[in-house]
Length: 377
Image (cartoon, rainbow, N blue to C red; front, side):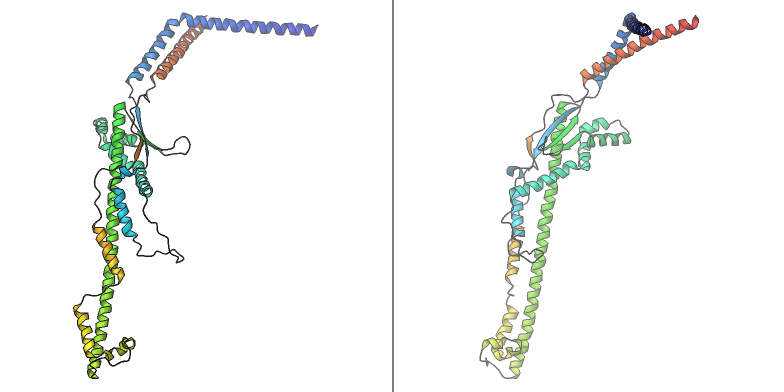
């Protein structure tokens, strides 16, 4: 009996709770309906504010370029110049040894891929240089127009933002991205593409400026090294000639004191020793002295090899003509889709925000009115 009564009571409470929820929801909808014009007005205002921002905010467009290491025709005369310099450096006249003293097998030639890779490595270094980016932006009308009326501090912040945020370089990851990609963001499609073209042109110019300097330094350093070695060989040979001249003069004087005019030995092999040289006789020794004094020194073969290499260095070509330090897989694109602002999203958020704010306004107003009525009662 008690159990049945308890179940009946619980059922009645559930029904009353459901009825109260339905009444509360009905009252809520009724309040919103009565305040519909206010909700609509606030929603419209939210859409209007969102639209004002969406259509007046600074636009952002991104141009992209995909690059790889340069090909033969893009290296111009640089590859041939490097080949010639490499041949002079590695002419085979010197046998290089490893740490254990074993001969090192030298490459027969410098490959195109090696030269191209080194050039592209320098390109990547230029692309990563923050100073190079700042220098590029400072030379553009795009930056000068934006910085014209800014304070020095604001100009510095603008330059930093352009350098760090508006130029991005992505390296291959071996998965989704297979090649190097360079991106530049500006306030219009045409500006983005033109600035990216100019930036990559600036990078290219910087690379070849570095490479020309490296080439000049390498050739000058090699020339100085070869000249030093050649001079040392000449000095050594001149010292040997002076020593031989002194020894021959002493032998002649000894032969003269002994009255030896002509060769008195049994074999020329024995008299070539310094202490036996006087046996050649004064006539032969005087002829040798005259030859040593008047003739040109006879240098070792290495001396003439160095002389030949120095002549080749003087014939190295100067770097001329246009060159490119990378190859385009995709040239700078003309953006067709705006990055920012996302107008449809902004308008949708404005409408949702206005609707929520208007609804809260209506409900809050009615709640305050009800509270005032209770306080008066």
